Length: 458
Image 1 (spheres, rainbow, N blue to C red):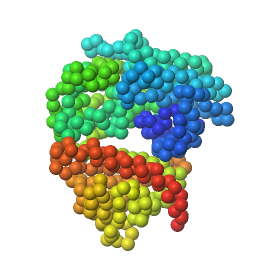
Image 2 (cartoon, one colour):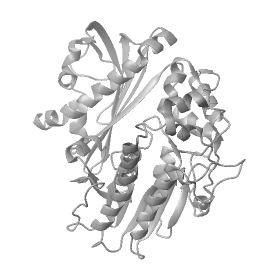
Image 3 (cartoon, rainbow, N blue to C red):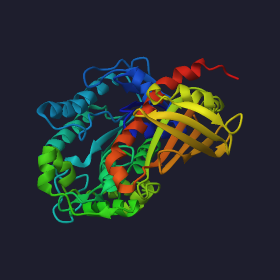
């Protein structure tokens, strides 16, 4: 099917785009910046530049079998000033209005939209909210109600599915990374009393639910998208401590959070127990039903101070060509930021292969470093891994994976690293190093495309 997607470079949109492509669908995306979308989206798509919060895109030359609408200002990213609250509201209401205006000429398509459980009032006792529960009288509820109301402008013959999504758990964004950092350097702590209900959902189940909606023409209406078993906030904090082999510390007082976050503190302190029984009754099966399963899977590689970062990039060319470029030693210097002064000194073999030792020098914030890595695994055109033998880290383990995806190649980097000096090292430098690693890969994302295109095909 040909599917239009908005919000395709966000936390959900990136992984959904990959899975839709794997399923054989073709995608057209709307983005405020076409160039950035091409760099950031880890899947093939035709990108149309348009800010739907301010204007309606021209889609008259396209036909879509389906539309997936994810676009909207992040509610947890910035303080809720009056201007930001207005931006949050208009990104959803005007964005949906402009999108529906552009779809007026379309026939025979489905519409799947993202909504939020913020529509519901705080839970009293252990009562679980359902899709028919009365809405709250809060800012988030008002935004969500207005958002959903706009989708009522769809023609009656359009199959419409709205997912009211809970707290999405992922190490790549959202609330969880903000909880991991303090847990790594000191302790994992409950927020407020810790007794408030948290209706969460694993990112993989979010993606699976959207695919379920795409593939099931009988599914329509509003559905809560949360795991079957909500947890107390302190249960999440304890599971994080358990998985990281970290200390479970005293709770962070509600007053402190309200002083620090203002109105946004409600995102962490409000108690919401929401039922997904309607979605389960429709035939959807959650892969992660309880918080133990979800945190166990998400943090399986995060132990004893180890940090993990994932990076994905799509290349519109064959897997063998992409693999050759990244496994050629000469190209490592070209894709590394100049500020690192990265230079290979020697290799133990003429070409990189399993067992190759690479010695190189670089500067980390102007401090000279000698580094030696070994190629631990090597599967031609599919995967290789380098591990630090000598260098500044207690652990450095970098896996490069290459996968056919649509008309090109998806490259996935998984970097696991651990700082020396234990908790002291993490306290002093963890945030600094996390940012450095991310910036190295962001630089690579910017420069690697033109370099690969100029590299002769052999």
